[in-house]
Length: 394
Image (tube, rainbow, N blue to C red):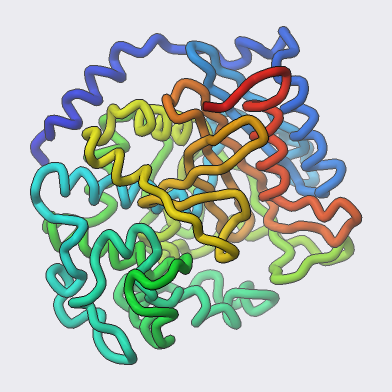
């Protein structure tokens, strides 16, 4: 693939960045509140473990609590990889916005324009749904995850975890449920939107979605631990811990814990199949927010958010594959992702100077008095890092 102007600028910017060292702040006590939040994830939420990487100007700090592997006491390492779930959506949206900047498509193109006949029937008309509506979840297309929830929730997940799907099968599953609302008339989170977005990327470029993500983002940003697994790749390549689930949708302290590290990621595809590290995610969002990945017009489109109301995480707004979260001291920007056994968040200040990337290797919220689960853990981490000790998000 030819190097785009955006890629050339990005590469030059990255080469000018001064490397930072892990643990630069560890002895100063500057992350005591954040470390306390990590400890609570283990002692109060009873999650196996949690890791975090913080970037603040030229400094970097890595923290952890609990264990990366039950029964061994192994701690987390900065190079540990994990499945990033819906943070994959930010990568897909970024690729589409780059294609728009290159005048290879418009976000206002219809789905029918790029995927003729695919979104049709059962109340759907692809000619009335735009790429933009896919990216901001206003298409009205039902979530394919709902159609397979009986097979992928509870103990049936253990029998179906290695089932393989093609992207078009995932679309068919989504379209088997009637539209949630008319295009543009509401907001509903739907993984089907981003499977379709990935198919648009492939149609517009003639190359696979994974190739486009690799050539446009992974290589220019030197994200050495980020990759899209092949459909048959049920494990995680490279260093990693283990990932655990109580199989949901409801949990209790006494519920059995299952190791779900191995699974077939094909049902996530463009909506949630990437593998990465906290460091790679911090780099990606740092460069994205600094304006080194997208031209100003496209970044402004990505940051144009709307209120999902009660349909998503409280206190958040959603743009194009990017979200904002309101803290007690201001706003932070980024994205979160969840997949069986792994929940992660990466958020930072609007200027990209200060970021936090975190992951827990358990997917439950115990029915305990604190009712502390992954999202609550992440919110406490964000508050501690960006608002604690007089700090202020901006």
